[in-house]
Image 1: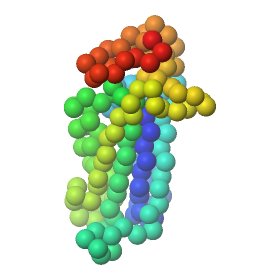
Image 2: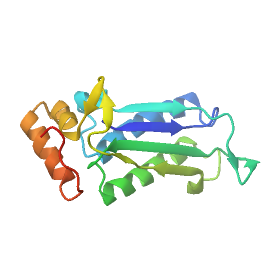
Image 3: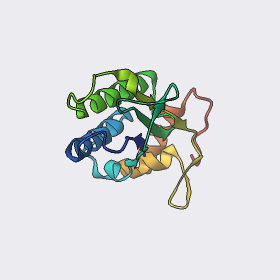
Length: 163
């Protein structure tokens, strides 16, 4: 159940480039969470929210080129160092690609945050949804979902909620 808050300044990208970027980000968000982007169950719970800052200031001055902020939130256990690094790298590259050379290709203009939401604190469907619940939804198999959550949360000090 990845969630991406994409802060893309108004007018920074052409409508076509932005649409392609958001599709690309959806796929990479799912892939970097360790799931299959072609799975319709998984896709149905991958949400992107686009925020439109009217202005971005850097060092107290209006930025001359677009600056972007992305918050890629996932349930606890979904990021390991390699996945987290891949998410930051992939989002940065995708955004700079989407600009299609309109600005200097400067990765310092793209900030990516990768928080994990502690198991037992993700709310959806009017209730708390755990990693085991999400994995069960994605796979269609409660036992497989529970085992997946136990493996992903092992060693993190988190107990599998509802196991």
